[in-house]
Length: 476
Ligand SMILES: Nc1ncnc2c1ncn2[C@@H]1O[C@H](COP(=O)(O)OP(=O)(O)OP(=O)(O)O)[C@@H](O)[C@H]1O
Image: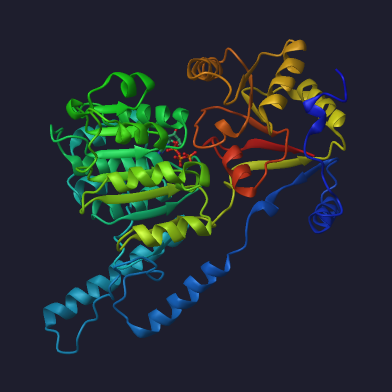
């Protein structure tokens, strides 16, 4: 391998001077935990932001103002009216109602506290105690409950406990929960319940995903959840885009990337009509609002022009610009946050390995393979070239390895993912094309061979898995 030309040798260098503060924190931790070159990465967890503190303080003030309040935070969204206050002249019946309401508020607060759920908005519906409440409170059809049992889902996850009632009550929703925490079900189930029956009135629901892989995965999940119904669930593929007369497309739920959907909107003939869409979901909304996708996402949001549309935004991180967008487009929305605002999942063990140099990284990787190769394993790198180069290195060592990045065709990407899911390859090298929203069951270890360029990217890379105690290594 020629050092000068190797992309593996041109990775991010750790600038100790620039990151002196962080570096000293590692040193302190090392003194406490003499564990060789490995260190704990829990510093990625953020403290509450100023905005969060404001929410808390405004909340306290509002609590002093009105006892009848049903909101935990304050309302940040358009169209938020004040909550009703009970008058002194209320009848006995009203007093009893009020007492029951207060008791319910206390139960809600306890449940939210237990599951780390934070809400903002007016009259936020009570969180679910169990999936059974989908039937008792909302008359959920039996096939949907049956599907939950078949999928082996016994308890709702925290985001499902709160986001499902919010969406079922017809409110717009803006939700943040860790990766792998069951957000897909949180938006798909209420949609299926609200749509009730298939209809020939055109497309009624659009789910936007930022990558084709995530769109394909969401379609698979959606079909599993809708099993037993006659809903027509379609993934916007290249073939569909090319060969379909969208004025005649029988479809209740359409799942697409913004780019493909924008192409259908802009078609001259037989173009898609989204004016009847009742539900619009923006999954991984922070990615959809990034500069590279903003224009396409915007044209989809505009094309969904039904005035009574219910929009929801789901993501694992919550940057300020996403909140700003939400504030401008959403009406009387409820904000649901599970856990810390931008923290990694707590069930992941994180380690930092100081390799010193690029050669050291490769050596350390070989060493960890030699000590305990614990597949399936994902390795993230910062560029396509570095992905290919590392692929060449590992392949040379007869490791069952695959590589995925945006230079591969859709078919090639699918086949790489299929091989990894089927256990034909043990190690998958990826650029951030895979870093978001993909769910690989059973992955035991994620290696950040190249340091991610922001905290959000790190959280997405390591948080793709619901398994308990996966390992995440960062090489420096
Ligand atoms: N209530 C539940 N109980 C057990 N498993 C669940 C439950 N809900 C969802 N899951 C499973 O958890 C895994 C992760 O779910 P999902 O992909 O929806 O997470 P996510 O929050 O959307 O993650 P990401 O941010 O990466 O998109 C999936 O395999 C899903 O089938």
